[in-house]
Length: 292
Length: 293
Image (cartoon, rainbow over all chains, first blue to last red; front, side):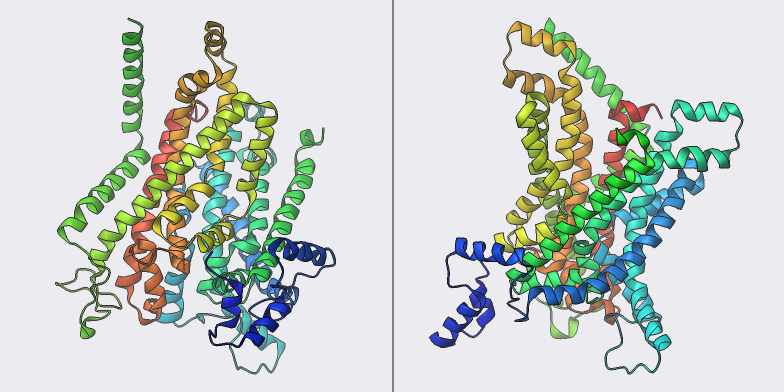
């Protein structure tokens, strides 16, 4: 298998046998793989995720540092995308077949078909290189001294703008299409005809009868996306050099930092399970039929 | 006699399909774009061959579009337009072969799970759930890194990770087909499970598989682009994803070399869009529930 951890850690092919032996011992690479696995599992139970090959520090310390940038960036993008995407979907479904619908649908399909990183490159070349409005990478300007909190927030916000824009553009398309399709399904149900026959106006029907019934599939994809966010921003974080989990994983992969990868996978697994659990709990609130 | 009636029926079915396809604007646009891309990437590289290893002169690097080079040159002085033609072949090939693997796996798992049921169904569906829920990109990244980066490994990795959606659709369709009276009749005649699955259930679920599969191709092409961009592509073959990878590595975005990073991206968007249009329109034609709308 390509990527022998020892070769990656040592880098220097002329390292003395003594140094190799010491490194082996430090990372516990001397034992056979099943003993290593057993030790890993035992340490896991006490919250010890092992030592990163690349940073030579406990994995958990580094992961904790990188969670907040990812959560901030992804959280903002998700909120924006959910609001705009749902709005766009509702408008398209209600004005089905009109120009607005065609424009909204083409916009959604095009952003959906775009490689995320490519969208990032285009945004960088327009906003950072040509217009010089926003910085290209990082979370704060390196080497800058901040005299006030406002200055710090301003600098952070200008770094945050492009990654959030790129990620939300990609997500808006997905949310808008799903919202439109499920709403169209709901609008053809028999009870919608009944409500119309009762004489309620369109606005009321959409708000009180159509949208609540279309929310279930939306909750599902939002939950799945939220679970994926922690690991799913690899492309955006790589392009914008955002110091989060996605970029950490990309680095760990390139350096064959197995303990780090295992730690990130564990984090992703936990977040996926949690997101699905939250979705299940929300179902029973939104749809009383699920309870039984 | 029997077979001639069946042939007639099949002919009629295909004719109605073509008729409703022709009246579907989305499908026609997608189909047209796709045919153009397939023709160009089949014939293009023959007329304008591209050699990955043949670099241009030092003063001919990252030059904007000119008469000699319609789309300019890249950071190694190679013609971008020729690279684009050759790249289309690789990207389409990855998309189509990965889809074949995914289609085969998804259909097999779906039919077996739906038809046999019981414990087999439970086990197969949990495996499917695993592939549906697990974050796709991290899984593919690790698989690609471990297997090594040849074009066939990339096809294999994408194919092995994209079948779960198809399996779900096929299973639910199989569950409904299995309950129809003709299956019972066939069983009464004495057909075994294998015959029923292969000869009677498969033809009935195939239209849906087809629509679903075209959507998988779109995802597969995007996946190849992403993998290559992240440095896990096949360096010996210049796909659109590899072009974007080199464009980003050479800083084309910050030097304003738009002719280098725009064309491959636009091609990916167009092809993915074409497959998506085609998939949606087939779904609309073949899925009875959608047709009503």
